[in-house]
Image 1: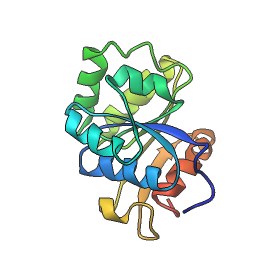
Image 2: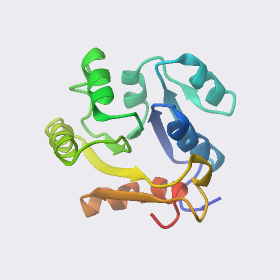
Image 3: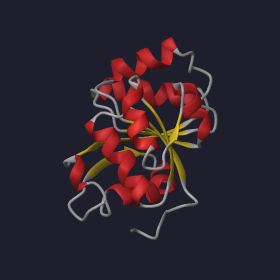
Image 4: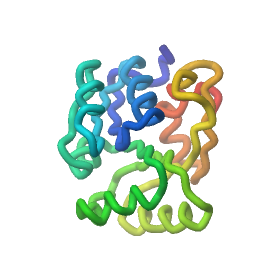
Length: 163
């Protein structure tokens, strides 16, 4: 386990497909407190059995922790979740670690949206298989302000030690 972060670090994960579930498992294995939300409850329950905290809505997941990792198929899916759940005004003080696939324009629009609503954003891509997360072969490519990336570093290093 990387000693840079652990039990005193709390994070929410929204989206529990193969990659999102791998992220949540890796963080749980590192000793983080992980809150999880997904559209299908079965994926949540599997992680709860490993020690995660279930969230009944994406709003609950955002409100549960200052750090929220979003890992969805694309930005359209994230935008649909924001709109369907009235999340527009819940990002004040929240740091989103966005690992959702998007175009440069979409990413820039999302960054502006999060910042307008008082949040911080680190945007990136997972460049490895879920089984590589938390190992020396784990790979993340991240972008954002240096201050936000430094703030997110403890979580990022748990996922990819040399991100």
